[in-house]
Length: 367
Image 1 (cartoon, one colour):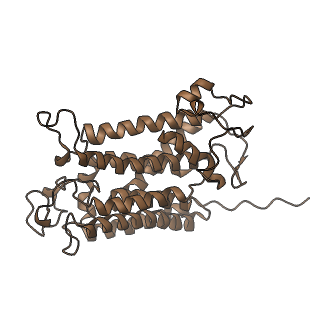
Image 2 (image 1 turned 90 degrees about the vertical axis):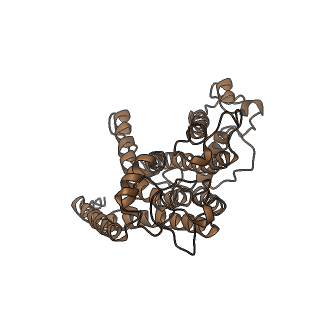
Image 3 (image 1 turned 180 degrees about the horizontal axis):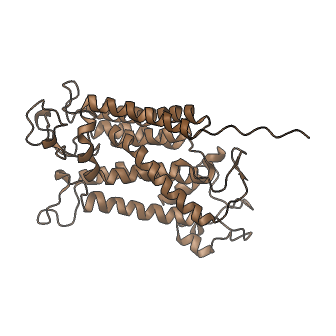
């Protein structure tokens, strides 16, 4: 059912149409689709992908988005609630005490993260089809992320005894960047706090910490994309990324924290390259540029927008955190090391843009 609604967003938001009116209908004959024909997955299979009235074909995207959303949501529930992938102590189920129920905290965590997953799917599909990410999707996700972060602040659902949480075995105030504390930070709905040890004005489990985690995560996700875009394009001499990608990472940062948002950019770049290779293999030979139905601009048919790769990068970073987190803990909780890495990274991006710079094509001669 959620996948069916995501299809509505994919079909209407790029055209700036209402997502609630009119009801679902064929885009060829504009006749409403019957209720039974609108059942997710089964309705498409029942009609064999064609309108009952005029016989016009429906895109296979309707079927795959509904099926993919259902499978992805089921996988999220299995990973976070059933398997307790991040090993959250408060989510461990004792079969002798609760043989048929999962902890309410686990269900709340699942529902919160499911919204992020659904927004990522919608944004990725729209970007793949129309080369844009409508602001409504990431900004709605931002709102949910900030509100949920305030209500479920780190280390929730783990208890914050007396408002004090440190890594196990670490003396109060000890820097979390030390090697003996790697991998010892308790994981919550917001995977990590914005810094550790946390400050007195935003203790663990407080609304202040939850808000700071979400707001700083959103800012970091947006600013890192904007900085990469500005520096690389300064050297490259042409546009390389869209600001919709910044909005997408802003939303992810509000849900998961700034550390996940920053790393997702680089994991997403690798994921986009992987998808690009697959797309080139599937395309075979170069195709003629096609006009976008939304912007009217001509784009290479084999050109891959960054949104799908970035969304995949967020998911991979999110669920690979048990391995990625301990390996980067020294970086995120040591200010000097972090600043040095930022300087080197931004300098490298500018240099890469200059090395890849190509002369602008000469204008065609007038006849």
